[in-house]
Image (cartoon, rainbow, N blue to C red; front, side, top):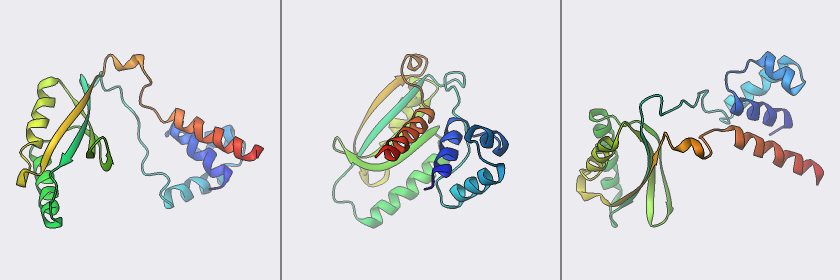
Length: 176
């Protein structure tokens, strides 16, 4: 990635609604260079979407949950396909405000989901739904709950810190 592309990406991580004109002023290049860099970043998949990070408390969510899931061992690949289909159907019937769900590994779990909940009972309902997966697929779940109103005393969810880190790393490379 070229330096201008990294700078554009980082500025958009800080504020995705900035115009190419404003970015050109910040980065001190022409607007056409910004436009070309942005298009390239989009085409190559560096930019997945333009979005914002809302205040989840103001939206009525009291809890954020990081839920770790361990599947039962020995599930065949067609069993996993059945589980995926059941999960899609379950989510259509019982929508859950989910920020992210990914496979991975660590702490003895294979999946983690980050979800938001209006209250504790909606979180409990989500756990109940997980336990209803077909084939008894889920062996164990554990969750870490964050009260969103209290989370303000910690680092909020933002990409600005990541953008600053990336720019700092680029400066370190130049010094070498």
